[in-house]
Image 1 (cartoon, rainbow, N blue to C red):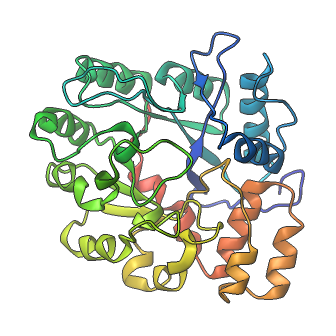
Image 2: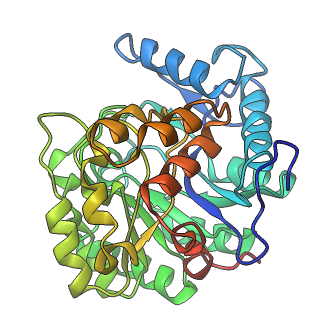
Length: 332
């Protein structure tokens, strides 16, 4: 039992597989943020929602964000959070493009994981980079447990045959790929067509364990919904999984009832998408949770714990939160 009275399970660790690191880089982290006018209110709301207590323009923001996140993990039912690096945007030939809204270097995420026992490091490498394989080797040696990409935002067509060596090295190293699928509205989208989970066919065929973030659900009202496409792919690719990140915001969680069906639920893992807000009212309106459970969860100040408890109330079993133990690469 932790300081807040939350139960720490004594069997397999409970893992949040989808947690974002952000920073402004003013104290040498190497991070950067470019928040446009349309996204500033959303960014400010997210920071208030998670309770960091420091402006994202403050020199101490990077350290405050990481320390607050580690504290939330310690004071939750979770044992660990997989923290995500964010590569810059490149074209297929490896030329860096001047776009993207934030960058988190691999070295910084690996450093945070060494400093905080609550963190597991997921690196991010555009496979079109000239140094992609060298960077991958360095990250494997440093203890990376997963690789994260947003194909539609990073401009990565994962089916490009030029990336075959990259996927094969990942498969050989048993390094899973967490790939964004479905719509996206918080990070600039370069190629909307790469939101389709079928763009993950080539790494799957090379034996990479792939986790389709958000289960290919839509983010905005006008986005295509690829959830049924994702479900169809599960029977074709035994190494394909999905995560339930951002399911406690409107629209993304609309397929929760289907996700609880055994043929789907056994292929899903827990992710929060922190610092994305955790709002249980949508789940209550859809009758995924009852009013008493909603009120209980809404009183939980720790947003990681709130997301965990809402999903437990929806019916996701303990295995949903421990399944990542079998998928992550063991750190060196």
